[in-house]
Length: 111
Length: 115
Image 1: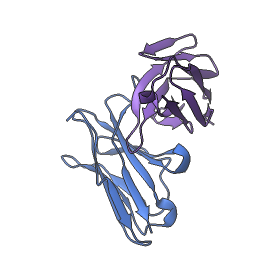
Image 2 (image 1 turned 180 degrees about the vertical axis):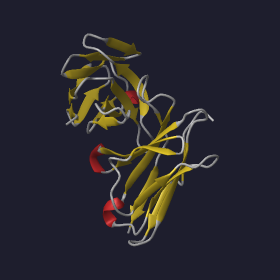
Image 3 (image 1 turned 180 degrees about the horizontal axis):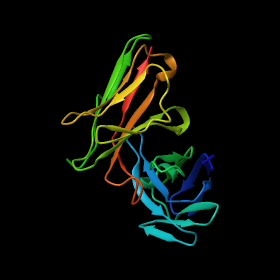
Image 4 (image 1 turned 90 degrees about the vertical axis):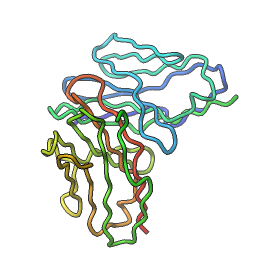
């Protein structure tokens, strides 16, 4: 069964304090691992898609990496505006395109 | 338009009442997905459509829940005889190519509260 587990559940950082969020996954034949950002009261906003082990993608202070079992979202020198819930999802192994989500990591960055 | 439009933003229903939620996908996107987000950010897949055809309904509860996507109309998700446990945020997402590419674009959700 396809499964996604994120850790930690919540993370508090001081502004400028770099850290990483973890996403462990189990899926038969990965066809995409996704990172989304969700702000309170809003829908998830797309950040990255990774397809194969060793792949990395960057956007501003965020960098996503992928291995065969997990993905990391590295946040370098975060700012308060990076505070949000970060969701990881994998495209399910069935041929329907549905995403299987993790529980999310809620990040709070204090000034 | 370039956004997925969901209405209403908030919906309050008494137990046993019907709830109907609407979703207008991005123009040109032929796939629509419905997800239910309950406590602690848990997203549960409900159903997807390719145009007006059901694409995947493996997450849809067997009873009380139904959905449609008709031509030239917003898609809809209907819950008959709502229960307290149906309280959640319901998200719709649309995509041109869900089997490849960058997943899909989500709407802002409809918060359903059953009292």
